[in-house]
Amino acid sequence: AQSVAQPEDQVNVAEGNPLTVKCTYSVSGNPYLFWYVQYPNRGLQFLLKYITGDNLVKGSYGFEAEFNKSQTSFHLKKPSALVSDSALYFCAVRDASNAGNMLTFGGGTRLMVKP
Amino acid sequence: DGGITQSPKYLFRKEGQNVTLSCEQNLNHDAMYWYRQDPGQGLRLIYYSQIVNDFQKGDIAEGYSVSREKKESFPLTVTSAQKNPTAFYLCASKPSGPSNTGELFFGEGSRLTVL
Image 1 (tube, rainbow over the protein chains, first blue to last red):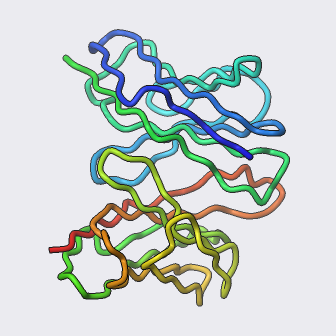
Image 2 (image 1 turned 30 degrees about the vertical axis):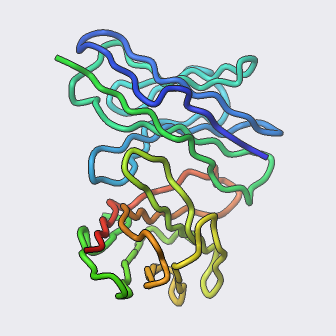
């Protein structure tokens, strides 16, 4: 079985400050990990993914995420938040050992960036 | 440009009426999915299809029906049997093959409101 947890329903940060949105996962084998962002009344947009290789993954809009195998985490980070980063963020995981598996999504974290 | 098109963007329905949401993709993806999203909530899988003329129920299939007569199209019908149909509906697709990492590509969503 595979699962993913986003422990924070909402994260508040001031514009210009660094932000972190947390994600932890559970899979039997190696994970494929993803971050998506959703703006109001829009579909999910792909931000970045970890498949293999460098643990620090860089994605769209200045976001990055660090894969930590020992802590089974894949936290999303950005050095300096923008008001326009305010949105709903979803972490997702798939067990790489089973090609038939679908993505499992976390419950989402709402990021609020205040001016 | 390649992508997934959902229509209509907004739809209003009276109680007791069936309504069909359209999802078309020109990405040549084999697999297609329908998710439901309630306000501030995560995604719940309604139906999915791995190949033409085949589909499977997801976690919340009751009150919904789908068809997959063409690779490009995966319409979702919300029937009168669905008790709480007001929601945001998201269609997604995924490529197949050995290089597939499980990444989903999403449409822009359809918001259904039952009056």
